[in-house]
Length: 98
Image (cartoon, rainbow, N blue to C red; front, side, top):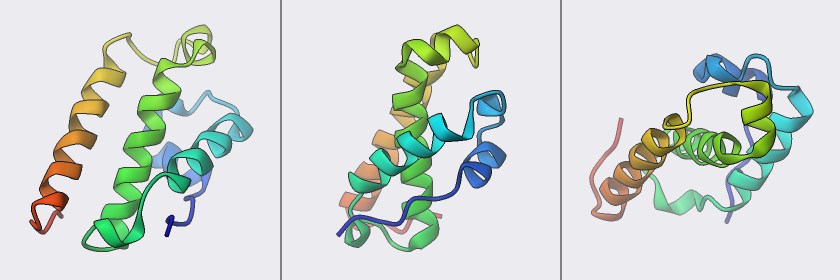
């Protein structure tokens, strides 16, 4: 089962690099990321939200629109991808992630 999509305001609070991005752009990709995040995989709802945030940040960071908006440096999406991978690996091993 997918997790609920967080709001654009919540996401922008956690990832201020996206402050200039239109809410519709952010909301679209948060929904996409949430639909691909399995609720039962993570320890709790805050970790699920963190996974959705990271997945959405990776996706949006690679979009041509993000480059046009100059939201971040080219390597930032790679850093978020590595953080998401670490979160998924820890959860998959049954470790509590906080």
